[in-house]
Length: 254
Ligand SMILES: [Zn+2]
Ligand SMILES: [Zn+2]
Ligand SMILES: [Zn+2]
Image (cartoon, rainbow, N blue to C red):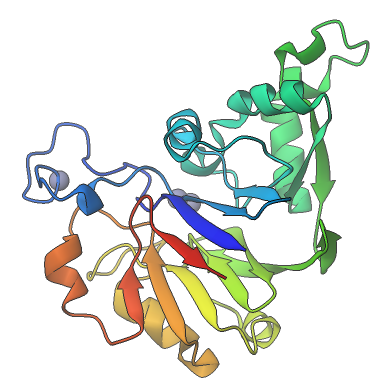
């Protein structure tokens, strides 16, 4: 399958509002970062991980023709607040889109986006997103793929990474429990949160991210959820070989 980075930026996005730092004013397209999200796709399958506030712009830019399923990492606004724009895809397919998240996150979504789940008589037809919320904890099957939710520590909160075959997507984390490292054994390609070089209470620094996954010894690592303190060109040069800064529009085979 192909993986397209729809967004590689932290919650603020880059450029950040009202900032004129060198990265926010950079002319390098790789320094323009929408909120973190990826699209996994091949001829027959189209899966989105996270639907943040830039979702509409991201799917227009990447020309995403359909969405078969959504995986959610957690309910922070930068990962969830584009949920309403899924309605186009449920209307196009005239199907409920399976939407996978942790049980806690499913509860949050039912509460905070009540209108999506309360139209039991279908009076709003396809005018709202039609989603089938599915709480996941263990490995599940989706479109012929084995997908394993990976519990992650995100400051005082929790986040869910996903392992799909020998690929793992681990955004928004500040620690990876040992039991989750066990679930990741054998992965070859890892996408992981690496906000910046200096410590942050809820996100790995780039060095911390690499240290956390060093027991896995992946073939390729892509850093995502990057803030405006990181310049694509200047900071890429500081990375070990086989470690790359993700950027919006980057497409890799997984
Ligand atoms: Zn985030
Ligand atoms: Zn800035
Ligand atoms: Zn978060």
